[in-house]
Image 1 (tube, rainbow, N blue to C red):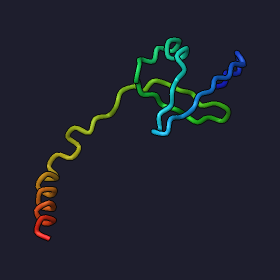
Image 2 (tube, rainbow, N blue to C red; image 1 turned 45 degrees about the horizontal axis):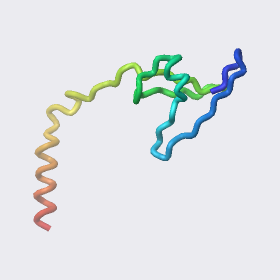
Image 3 (spheres, rainbow, N blue to C red; image 1 turned 180 degrees about the vertical axis):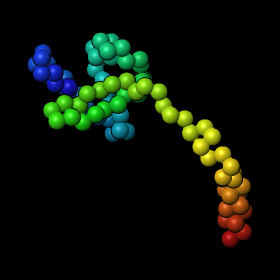
Length: 81
């Protein structure tokens, strides 16, 4: 992260799993809890990192679609092959 006001540049490597490590100094400074999820935003000359503010739930989104019955029927069909 480059901060224009302070001229500070911090570098780290992205993990092969798609995760990125936030340097320990920043986790304390910006109060990121351990193993928290963050959002990255691509801007013209910076990539701000902010803590994720809640996660939308899918609870109830698929109600009434009979997905369990469809899955069970599909599995029965595959067993018969």
